[in-house]
Image (cartoon, rainbow, N blue to C red):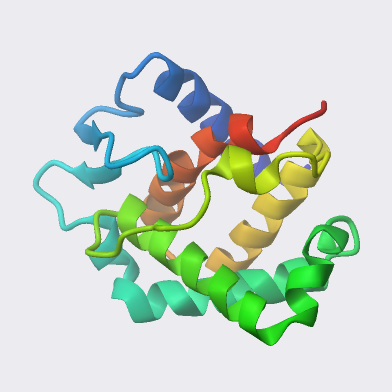
Length: 170
């Protein structure tokens, strides 16, 4: 396992435990429950929001496009997205929801209006290995687009707690 993947998985697991205890994931972080969809906005004290540091909505959309392309090419998990990939309207909605989710979670002006993660993934049988593959595809997109380590770690720590609503089997 690559060093970055190990660090990420540790950060995700740590963030999940931290979120369960309703404590900030790291010193200086402020979390609020914006809604049940995104686990809240995160802003480092004294810094621009994660949304701003990622480059705003257009940059987030670029990350989502790259991420979705990675998932589509990933034989380990692309079966979960086959129906969405086959329908252009459904794919546009899917990408739009991802952009809004990341935007809102990063402290941006967007409002995620999609299903809860639990509802969206119910009955899919997503395993821990499937979730890890998805995370690898996201990290690959972030690395390709040269997202900074601070922003990458912060984004992953915001999204990581969703794992418990997505994974249904070990």
